[in-house]
Image (cartoon, rainbow, N blue to C red; front, side, top):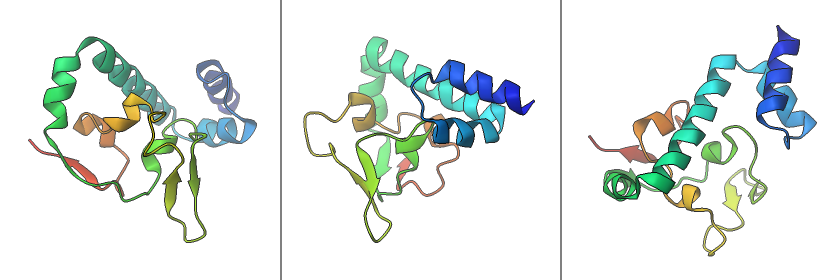
Length: 124
């Protein structure tokens, strides 16, 4: 089963490093599939349901606590690192290079499954 998980992970993430592949293939396959579904869901909504994205943005409360959990849902973002105190740092946070999907995260409550440290909350 571990070989199947590893091969599935490699197929989903061909650019992932060997460390990321090992970490992900050790995780529950359902967790990986949920993260992939979330990425596809956000991509679709961002590009095809912009009015819904704008409406949802008004339901987000809180602020980033620099935990980094959203920055490595499947793979670790290359712009993200931790400082000496263990706080996360996004190298493109205050720039035009910050991807739109990062600017609007989280979009729904489903995006926050497994992110207990996240400082953002979605209002009902």
